[in-house]
Length: 267
Image 1 (cartoon, rainbow, N blue to C red):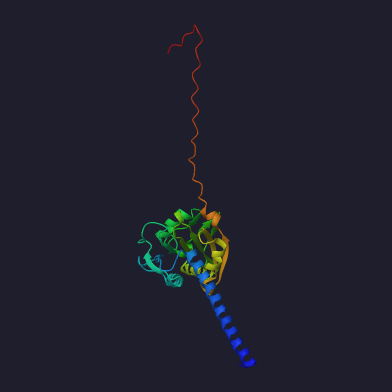
Image 2: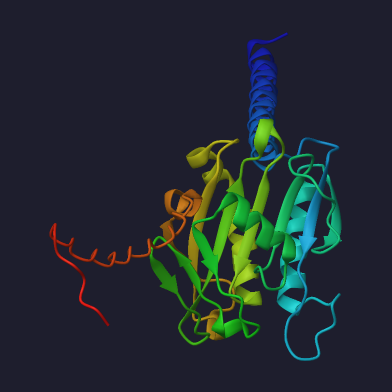
């Protein structure tokens, strides 16, 4: 075998080894990323989760209908679950099984259209108040002493949160927007940025983010800004109002004592 042929063979072997090592390294990185995503979402391979579906609100809306935007959001959530190798079970907000932490729960919609969302907010994020108006644009989100209103020509808002459940159970994810576009934007933010959220908050913590969807009439759910991390304010339970103490009425003064040896005047 000539030296030139040997050099060619050695080069081919080295290239094959380099390609194999590169492929193996990429596979290991993808595997680690997938495992972190599964841990963050509480979705190990072969597991099951609940996607809790809200209802459409408004005049003439049927109890089991959802808006078109919410349907888009549900499809993106289902795709994220499938990416983890898990199975999603879609359930109506008023038919979700009782209990907490047995399965990962992805809950969509405001507390007006989703009873399960109302329960989760009261339990896990008591510092958040979302108005109960039936008109979407009348909804407001109040947290940390600030109130955020909705205006389709300017901005709408969505709360995206992860709640850790007792005894290390599976997490609960909340996407509660002021409109269907806001719900869709919140889901898209979670799907797109779950790796960054994992690095920042870990795989077992609670967080709450308030996002602004800019000019949804023009841009839909595509232009989203983070308003604030409101975790500290959201998990803080507001102080209960103390009953106001009633003033004690002044007692009537006692009649003056009569001096000894005197008699009371006759009637």
